Image (cartoon, rainbow, N blue to C red):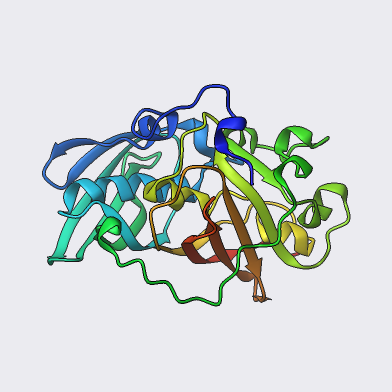
Length: 286
């Protein structure tokens, strides 16, 4: 398995990287945070949902007595745009092992009215305090070696509007899930990729919130094109990831009524399942 150090000549550190700076919130007063949403995390002109989840996740990590997201569920109400935003948090309950809070991100619309973009409910704890006992039937995804996979720079025709976020990611997609890029989608709702941040920063619990929503939509491999906006996304962070590139596998089994689900698994370099997610997304048919 490749080491992350072989992929990056220089490496950013957790806490001192573009991802950390762009998700950093400034506490205005207890429970209220300001942020300027970066245009660097947009796809087809909209701010990526995983990036937004990491922003709210960082605010909740400051507001709650525990720092690690265990489970976080988000409802995406309106599309967010690059620029100023306000995050408001509320502590619902604090306990010895888990604390629960909610947060909402607001921006102003063209008429100057405050508009809620996303609302989350989350429980936080201490990942380092969890027992080592693991009993699972889950297996790491079957994915080609990283040097046999392909990134956005290898595509002859990049997805319009997607270059901003892909410039900040290390994505190497499994050729078995790249039929859509060649005009021959497999019809299977599958997407698999090696994943990291372009500056070499190792993964942590907050960046896992980005990882589950950073691959091309499984709808592409079903034969659909265009924007696939997230309606709801729930992420479970299972353990702190080991250094090195992640492997992300996403599947869709059911598209009905213009909506599909995406189930994601994220595996680290130590072959541990470090995050799982499910989201409901909308697709444009016809």
